[in-house]
Amino acid sequence: MSDSYEYLVRAKALADDRRAAEAREAVDWALAHAEGDDVDVLVLAGVILLILGDAHAALSVALRAAQAEPDGWEPQVLIADASRFLERIPDAVAAGRRAVALAPDEPEAQIALWRALAEFRTIRGVPKQIRAELAATARRAEELGVDPDQFTKPSLWLKLIPFAVAFGLIRLASGWALAAVLVIGALLGAALWLLQAHRSGATASGRVQSMRALSRTEIAHDPAKSRTAVINITACLPLLPFVATAFPCAAASDGDPWSTWSVTFAVGGAVVVLLLAARAVRWWYGEEFLRRELVPSRPAALHLGAVALLLGGTLALSLAGTTSTDWWLALVIGHFLWLFTGLGLSVGLLARDQRRRGALPRG
Image (cartoon, rainbow, N blue to C red; front, top):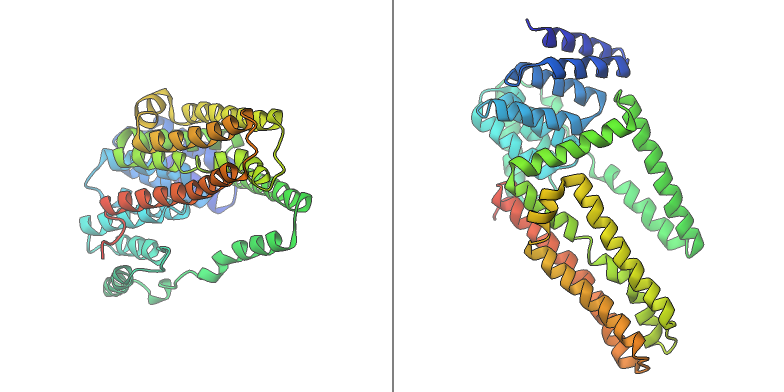
């Protein structure tokens, strides 16, 4: 038995005793001294990281294990479980299916697939193909001796509670009150994230580094993940002109235009946000991804072109001193149209990529 495995056995005992910091230290030592192809060590380390609540680190380790043993079913189970914890349900389903295909007689593989399928949702609900596969997976797992009590579906209503609360606050609050609610919510979310990092035995900066390392690993080894990252990043771009220049356009269409300096400030602020976002993407994913994957991509060209037209059109009308409400109304409509069209385009591209990876049914 290797020293790394012995350390992980100790880490498991520490994690069970809720001594997260010591358990995490043992896991990190084991991973640092493990051989690259020691899949048993990697899988056990990933399981302990899941117990500690650090699904990002667990998924990173699972990907290492899958790369070391492409035909191993245990790394695929770990990928499925970690992806499910991270709400990456299509990825969890795809990994669960790979695990079952590699080891159809392993109960753990069937359970991993069932749990991923049970979390699967689309805009139209649970697809029929998924429901049929869910039932078939449960039957097969029971045939292999799995306790039927494990097959309890998660409550969808519990997941809808935060959205219901948010909707109620938006309906009741307005102006500064709504802004205060959003700020308080952001602070509470940050505090919860820090608490989760502490409970996992990691520092806040260490957890950020773990998340960034996982993102870079995924796009480096999976072109589909790289495409997904491009789509996710560009999906935010329709919000930029809407937030920056839709309001001055709406005011001008009502006959109460903003001053040229105010419009220039709004457009300049949007450009600064765009540049800062580019720097953040480069820091998170790396210079290579920004230069070779994101900037030349069709989604980026389309979205950036629309942003330039809306921001530039607003600034041009303001500089020209246009008083015709028709022109301003046309820009307002353009902002709304692109907001929904751009977001819808991103959703469609993501769905197409998921179907290509086999995570979504085609029917």
